[in-house]
Amino acid sequence: MTVHNAASNVRRVRTLFLSDVHLGSKAAKTDFLLDFLRCHEAATIVLVGDIVDGWRLKRSWYWPQNCNDVVQKLLRKARKGARIVYIPGNHDEFLRDFPGVHFGGIEVARQIVHEAADGKRYLVLHGDEFDVVVRNARLLAYLGDWAYDAAIVVNIALAAIRRRLGLPYWSFSAWAKLQVKHAVNFIGAFQNVVAEEARKHGADGVICGHIHHAVIEDIDGIRYINTGDWVESCTAVVEHWDGTMELITWQMPAARAAAVAALPRQAEKAALSDKAQEAA
Ligand SMILES: [Mn+2]
Image 1 (spheres, rainbow, N blue to C red):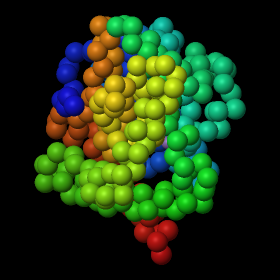
Image 2: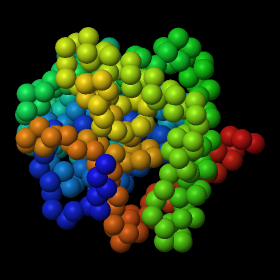
Image 3: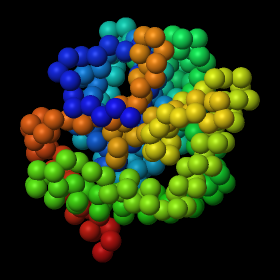
Image 4: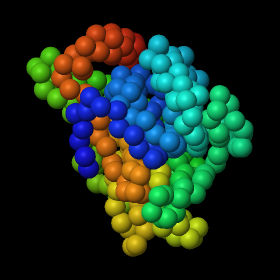
């Protein structure tokens, strides 16, 4: 995995894959994503689901300016000629009723096959269709969401303390999840099922999101690529002009992070007091 400290130059790539931004959730790291989008131009951008968190928005409307900025930035890239494909996930499943529809230059598709520059074919889908919990027990999924919220609150508090101490961002909730054996098993099972699906399609690999665990690895001859997320790990996958896939973890340099810290910090304070009220 490549860790980037935002190169000042804009990088031009063939394809950009990103997922699980969860716009509308207070955990969405829109400042990191905006910075990343500023530094990357792509001929094709594939949004691999859960870009907008419709579940969260249904409960309470949270749409700060940063969310608009992300949408505007993507639409501007479409206007400037980038092909943008939106593959809805389970949190933005309202878009699944519109396969083939174009809005603002963005096309909606349930899943696509992406042919890379090296001729390799990748099945691209969000991945929740293989998540038995989500599929069969929506109630359990909501409970899972609640437990996830709790981890996010701890994460936000810890991140604020670390920032004050001048330490780089480190995700408690991502770490905690990795420590849970069950989560590790779930990730492994998910990866195998999704890779198997790619094999059934006669594809060389699969590109998905959903489980917020970014990785590029080979599973029994199938290239498994997960784009990760922008609520914890700030990851994306780019395809270079020769077809090489690269996993990027986006970190802003301290100076730039400090400059944008004021706004998120207010949002985090609001998030914490909201959570405190909810808990009460
Ligand atoms: Mn999802």
